Length: 186
Image (cartoon, rainbow, N blue to C red):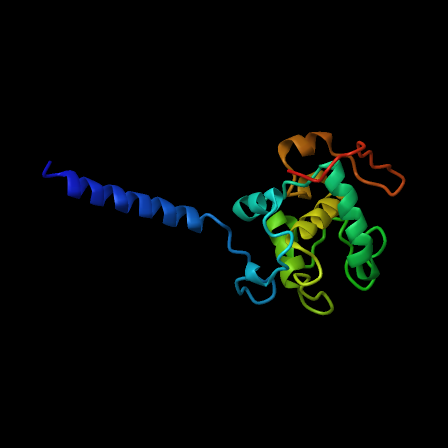
């Protein structure tokens, strides 16, 4: 019985250490122009706690990539929030093309980096979008941008091995098949 308080103390420290490690597991997203940490507390309140956002904030991988219902919503959001600068098919106008393998900010080659660009903005006219789009909507837009990619598969750092195997470059005449009643979820 002499070791009971000591054992309890050691167990308490172990639990605290695990809790601290879990708290640090969330990725720190950084502004692509100055490297400062992006504060997710600045994001719109709605759309913060969806399963997709929670998964993304832990992994840095967009769980909506390749999900038809999410792609359709992402397309609609892209047309209203992004197409004025990036073009109807993200081919580039005032802002750069988002469909090829050239990224003004190389961070855009990963989901974590593309999210940082959208959330925190970049140079010139790409302002931060955290007041215009919810975190969940940003992930949907990102999924659409990844879907309409038509560059070489080797340059698509965000793709999983499974996605690389079935990759076909996108073209505007492709029809997106979304099952009736499908919802955007990871």
